[in-house]
Image (cartoon, rainbow, N blue to C red):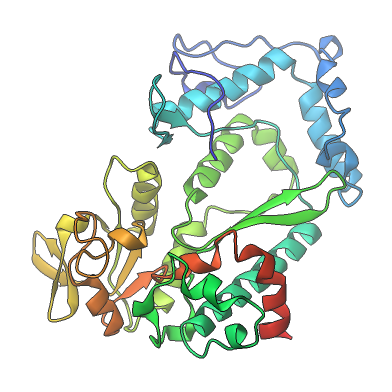
Length: 377
């Protein structure tokens, strides 16, 4: 869960932090450059820990990569690093890159947690993690197709039948409904952790309405601003293409060529609204609420200044139970009446598909390894 570490009281100019010599902007934090030999070495004392540290404990990381990062860190005092980190935090607040935490008296708007020191993963390690995540998502999609069709894994008593069919996220409306490519989760959030020995593990799966990718993209962007030398010296894998890849994936799942795509948001009071607007803007597609959409003859339309426009793909950031008041919660004002009927008649794609939540539940997590063997051999 995202948490905040300290409050922000002032707004710093991001452009003032693009070099080692930090400018004298009156609204910016000012840092005086110090000669390397006078740097405080207290930073490296923190490397001694029983927790895994990629910079000193990862045997797969090349010595050259580690040395470049250590060299950059050694050229800055702890106070300078704290000020750079604060500059990033103030930039997030100034740009509105926030999320919402409910139920706290001191306020609900929070900037994203940010750590200036990069977490480095070698390409060969990342390739292994990437292939493992792809395999996991494939197995979970096959599981979802199975439980909404033949239910072979339930009949084989590998996953308890009652645990699936009686689950609150299981949607009977989806039974026997065929999806293009048998893809239920177009966007999957796989949470990865490392133990004290550096081994990677999956903490949990997120298949319903995964969120957080915009914060990753913005964190990378601010890192490039604050640490340009590190990015120039190292071959860092690019991630800024994510929104276009997302758009391509959504388009591939549509039933028509050149589909009209929208991002459905609950509205600006939602905790992840910044991400909804960010992705819509980056994909160059409309950001809509339930009031912008309507269904007629089992087809979904969006209201525009030029009249109505048929929608082919809805990238929804609304939970299942609020999607359609005619199908789920009748009191919902966040969904679109008739949306599920249009969906079940293959006139629109909803991503991710309703009913995916049963596969990412904590009670199903222990059976995922068995899904690999059952579906993938």
